[in-house]
Length: 255
Image (cartoon, rainbow, N blue to C red):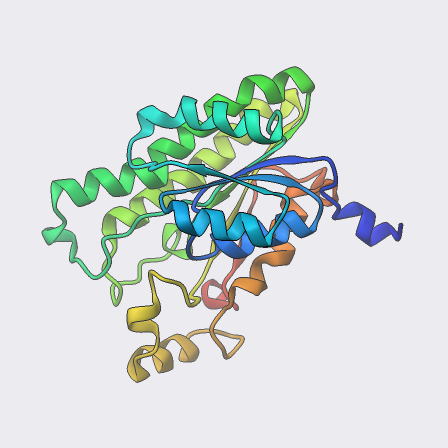
């Protein structure tokens, strides 16, 4: 096998992927499966999970709503039963009360955003930690956002930004605490790309022009643009990398 292909291979790896039915999640599921991983795909929508699993034989559906963090132990138990002890955790699930100004966010929106985007990822990492520690290896990948490091008032999302900022911070702290156990923890921070969450606004001419005017690579991102970052952090190619956030934003935060 060529060196590059071998480095990025996930053959024999077991992955737990959240948020698998929307946004980047579906592409992540396909990419991980194609790289040889067995993937427990977690999401709320059973029909979509079944569809993804049917098209990607390496994927196994695990239906769950991570707005309820108390179900995390059950999610990890079902995922482990389905694909084996988890080698790679991808905390990708996200919720955003889009377009709501900071002063108008409701208690329910705040609670749901924090539960899905921060509390459940923390509990998922805690739940997979013992098995990773026992085996002396593991990779945790948190999907954050450029709003963790840049205010973007044109898209009001205060609590979402706070949750992603927290996830980026805890990426570094987990990396510092768990490196001695062979567990690497990194993050991917997407910029603007088309997804279910952004589709209602991203096609507006003014929004498109504003994004393109502020992005060094003059186009919107696509889900495929994250394949390399995901495989790099999940595989042995990044064996000496931990505590880092890989920003995939076309250069938005570079200026």
